[in-house]
Image (cartoon, rainbow, N blue to C red; front, top):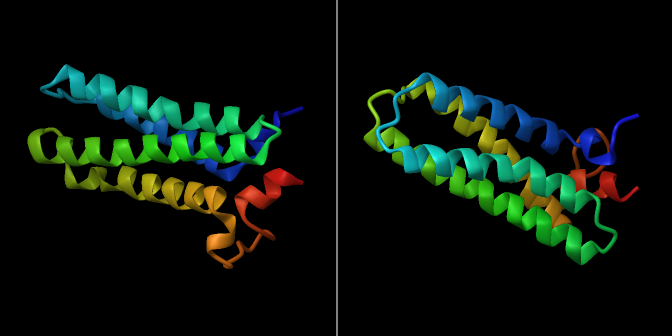
Length: 133
């Protein structure tokens, strides 16, 4: 029997992102270990905050944790930009990892502000609305 957060698409995508970041950091010589450590921590923060937020009963608390997860995702985007700029081991093909990150940010944005956009996902509502059921 899975936990509720394990049913969320954004949670599963965030785990994929952590896996890709781990692979990226392990396979390449990143010249600055601080960047590597920060990217690892920020990527791990995304699924952890999604899971913790999804477990909160208060709508305000849930949104706060989803906002933190979104902030960590944005931090990862900036760190990937830094790696792209300063690391010879970071290839253009690694842009796929940023595409995944953009999907995560978009989903978290809708979860934080579900009324801001009236677009519905094909599965029947936003990620946030599904976790409310």
